[in-house]
Picture: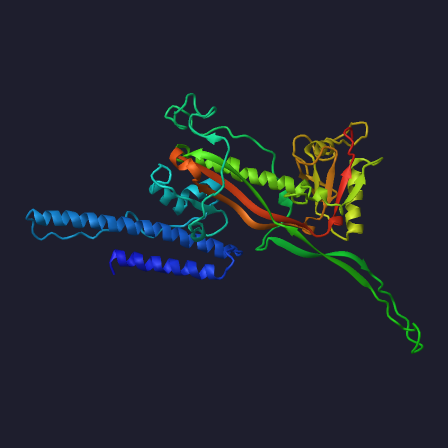
Amino acid sequence: MNDVQRLQTELQGHNATILEIEKRYPDGIITKDEDFDALQVEVKAVEQKSIDYANLRERQEALKKAADAARAMGAQNVNLPSVNPDGDPTPQFQMEHKSFGELFIESGDFAARLKGGAFDGTSIQNFKFELGKSLLENAREMKGLEQKTAGALIHGGRSGFDDAADQPFSSVARRAGYVPLLYAERTFSELFRRTPITEEIYEFVKEKTFTNNADTIAEASSLSGTSGAKPVSDFDFEVTNVVVKDIAHYMVVTNRMLRQSNLRSLIDERLALGLDIKVESQVQSGNGTGNNLTGILADLGIQTRAMGADNIFNAIHKALTAVRVTALSVPNFIAMNPEDWEIVRLTRELESGGGGYLFGPPSSSGVMSLWGIPVTLAYGLTKGTALVGDSNQAEILDRQRTAITVGTINDYFIRNTQVILAEMALAFAIYRPAAFCIVSGLAADE
């Protein structure tokens, strides 16, 4: 078996493995980590060996042409040497965490479009790259963006990118990279599990009340009346639903910008990050009207407690008790504004302010917990407000994870300009609102 046949056989084997894995998940969502990892390895192998195969055939063709030319000039006994791809044709795989931008730039589809002239104005091409799905799905053709697009154009001569118009974004004299804008941590949405769904409307059942009349029973002394009769209990349920909402935004970019390495930061630090920031806000305090999700703080069924005459510690403990008693749930988080947590962290042993710090000396970070429950810093919570609850009683439902789309529409082609769009689709279900309790009026001088 020659080298070409060997590579063809190996490629067929990898493709067969990929198809076998994808057949197990007809909806396109791979739920098992081991299958997802195996798929990425196989796809990477196909990409690498396809390159090896193309290189091998190209070099063989070049040698054949050279041999034909030598024969035409009268050379005798011209034989083609055996040609192998550079290095070991069998790639070594090492899974690593990569950013959205790295995955996008290194995808085979991006490379093919770049080589085919997608960004130099010689052709109109649209393609899609979805994070969390197989590269086979990402390679499928997408429909171009159809509606008129407007927005600020990111180009080389724009203020903040260059000193003068028509200068490239990167130059020999300029330091590579930039100082990114900073945003608050997305900590609140991370409290809740994320589950993939395939529906646009997610329906579920809520338990409204449970009347428990279980009791001890006396021995029957008669076959009539209530003698020896067992008590009856009752459940009250309601069927409700949440609707999937789309979250998206885009940037308009010139082809020159797309050719720069800074495309990675454009995707990572603006588009994908922007979606995460919006999810954080919606899960916490979306008001449920229009295209907004209903966040925890806006659900009318959650409990509330005012701090009143209590101190912060007692008020939060009473809220934890309310979750346990009223909702029969086990609270597993306390969310606080960083400035409110600072009050707690700086509390000292004596009410007058003397003595050691209750949560550890200044030389240590201290324990981020109250009453044995972890504390999460939620930057979106209003100062003076804390939230306690059981995060198992709510869930983020992913209809579509983050997708990055690049396309050319309308007259953007003749302007060497394209649109980069980021979008996701999700819903947020709160199964037991009473499992969450707001603590308001936290005093600033405690």
